[in-house]
Image 1: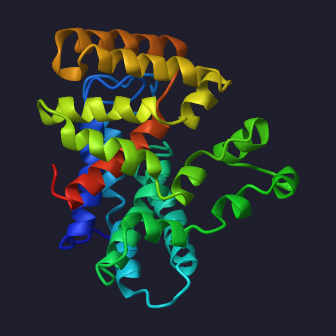
Image 2: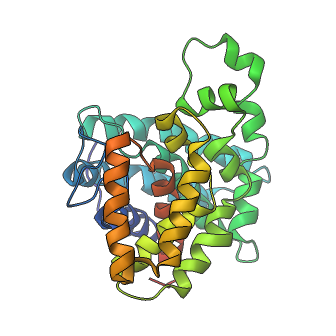
Image 3: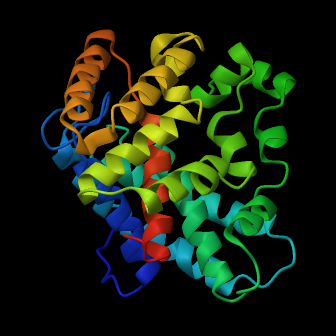
Length: 283
């Protein structure tokens, strides 16, 4: 896939959000510049290669949203999804088969397309556009009878069959409420360095969501109340800008590594939060 010059601010913010997220440390259960966490098959350089491989994808998402003129916004999502499948292959080529950004390809692609569409329709909110794009998504993707007949399922589809969790599809179909209702307001109010603000925001996301990547690793939804309790304790300590908060994160990261737990879903929502914050110029 050829490299493209980045002249579109939406594309630049999308790529920046991916690079910001992987640069934040220490993130429990996630890759950062200091640690690979519970992901021995990847490091920060894998994520950089992966992010840059998605330039053409985000360019296409922006163009599709900008040029879309039909009334049915679900058709915009259909077009974005086709490009998303191509982007997954580009990612896997760049990372030599490692899944670094599959979740972000889904969420951030939707966000870029929605923001591009909004530039032509300033009266519409991000939440409204996303909700209109994704009408019927969980019903279409997670029909139980259809899933039972499939030869291979995604991790999200398996979790739906096991526990009835709609995961990132459900979050997206509602317009990403964890991001708009909790993460973005928290980031606006957060103080300290950029790294500290983003760490605090990540833990707010963990506190207010059900990370299906965490559930998949733990093999039980019972991990969620425990994880949310850890997030609350960290924030009660004063967050990443306090000595106690930083020490707690270091210790929590070791627990995640020991138990082979990952916060991949929370990381994807942090990426989306960073993107929207850049769009709103609060970063």
